[in-house]
Image (cartoon, rainbow, N blue to C red; front, side):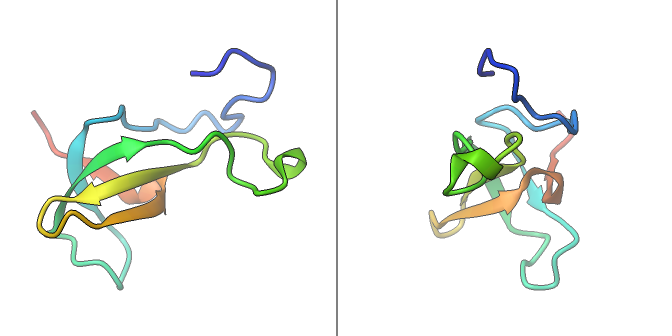
Length: 80
């Protein structure tokens, strides 16, 4: 994680890069599609003055290799 004052102030439990799981709770995404956390953006806002922390992650769907950005709380990691 970045070592600065403005870090994930909501203390959400974000999955580590490489975690395999599913996107749940969205009607537009089939919850059976497996995906892997690829990376996190440096900030949520194009104008960094309004970004308070990292809340989103990029995932890669394993069925068609599509990259998509989601809020971190939509991702549910598979139990190991």
